[in-house]
Image (cartoon, rainbow, N blue to C red; front, top):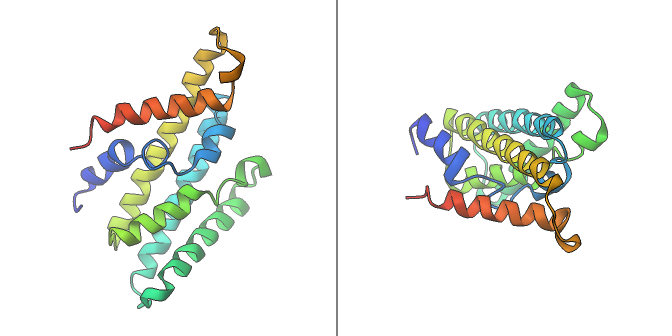
Amino acid sequence: MTNGLEFLGKGLITQNLILLQGLGMYALTRHTKTVPGALKAGSSMLAAMVTAGLGAWALSFVDIPESLAFISSLAVACLAAFLWQRLLQMPPSLTGGLLDSALVGLLLLMGRDQVMGFAAVSYALSAGLGYLLALIVVAYVRHRLELAPIPKAFRGVPLILITAGLLGMALLGFKL
């Protein structure tokens, strides 16, 4: 993956962290009650992911042993989440999810795929945009389903997970 547009396509559609990788389900079930809430949560996670990508880019200049790669990824994720929690001054309900499995999973995926240098920032930006897009789409679908006659057993989280699964299966058609 060397092309920026290829990163963008993979982050938005074919390797979406929420819908296809299953990372960040906490935000999907918690922050999609309203579209503005999903926009706030997604944009704060986008900022944290780009910051983590910048941290991964900075760590690419340091020689780190293989046994410490996981710890360095976790340190970058914690630093990015802490930085944006202090900078945004948002309520704890939104900033509590900044150290989400999607952020840690993004850093581990970048390590697995050997994404280094500026490509790490590009990959983090595209993954963050895909995260934001998934939250907004699910929030919009959830808003549209409020008036639908849904059985009691499927209301709430089960319906969100079914919706996310169907959206993920729809995105699987774009994989080559």
